[in-house]
Image (cartoon, rainbow, N blue to C red; front, side, top):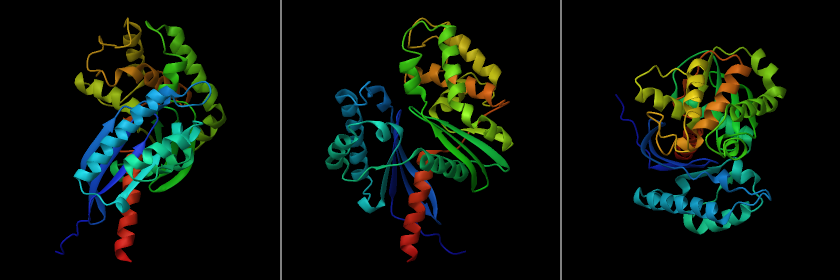
Length: 313
């Protein structure tokens, strides 16, 4: 049996509107093997003002995370050519994005590539395919901090993709910014999702997918609470409505009375549950499973393919 070659380490960094992530990997036989994971809830979208300017406080929060990533890149001895840095919704829309790039460059020593919502959707799907077993036509939903991506694919083929400007951090500011929460807050959030989805709903339903996967922190939070409670990890509308009732029974934003919910997950939990309820109802979803990976895994696979191509040539 021939020995499988092991690549030099490489890193995929994704700067989302809620979380910044870094995966460090080696390729073994052209397959990424993750050797380290780093994540911080930066909640970048939280700092977008009415004027479209990202606040200094939140920008500094992001830059501090990049400094931590830079330290980890040095510790893992990762060559600059083996790093990819992709940013999503918040850095697509803020008016002072150039300032963020200028201040990030001397810290990270690497250019940040801001990708479109459709490119993000492609990479999310690729990350799901690379990490999640299953066959047939699948609908993948990724609820981020400031955007939500919808992708329908069959195998490696993407049949539909779109990105809508709605997400957990933005919903916090618009619908879930006071406690205790009321049923009306959920109703307004659900109505807003229905409006945003209206243009694409018929097309999504016509494509007739066989299963639904969630590839977001919102879905991860729901699943982790179900795991803590030793329940099935399959998400249903009944489970989501139960979480809505749990949230409405809490008196403050810590949601400390919800067993299994961590302090890190609590700030965007209500918004995530509301968006999921709206999507279950609007798209007639029966059940949703957590995907094995999403954007960061898609970027990692892209980087692995680039390195493999470079080596072969």
